Image (cartoon, rainbow, N blue to C red; front, top):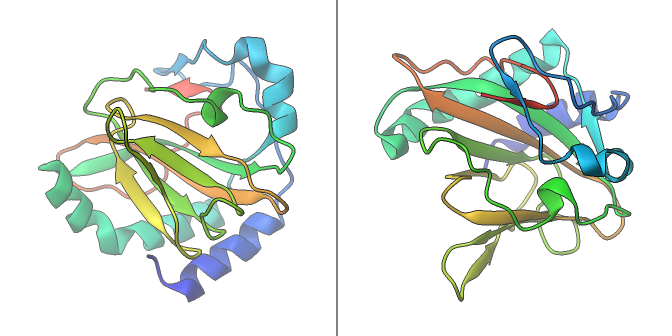
Length: 193
C-alpha cells in the first residue's frame, strides 16, 4: 500500500480533472490502436471516465512509483519502464464491457500491469478480479493506495464497478528496460505497445 498522504494528494488532483472522451484513433506514433473496444465505444464512454493527467500529476505518480521500482524489478527479474498508463473513474452505472468484462489482454508476456487504487478497492467500492485458476477468483481488496502487479495477458481478469461512488484507479503498463524508469509515458487512451 502506498502512503496515504501521497495517494490522498494525488486523489485530490485527480478529482479536479474533467474527463476526456475515449476515441478509437487515440494512440501515439509507434503504438497500435486497440480494436476490441470500438463496437462498445458509446457504452464505454458512458461507463468509464478517462482522465488525461498533466505534468504535475505525472510527476507525482513518478514519485509514488519510485520507492517500489526495485521491488517490481525483483519480481520481474529485470529493470522496467512505463510504456503507457490510463487513469479511470469507473462509474456505478458502468456496463460490463471492455475492462469490466472477463478478458485477457492478449499482449506479449513481457508487458505487465501495475494497478493503483485511489479509492479503496472492494466489492462495494469497485475493484478488479483475477482468475488465478479454473476454480479460484481473487478479488483485490484494501485501502486507498493499494497496488497490484500482475501479468495481464497471463490471467483472465475484469474490473468490478462500484456500487455508489466512482472508483478511481490508474493502470500502468510496464515493459523491460535497461534501467527502471518510473515517469508515466502517455501514449493515448487507446494505445497498445
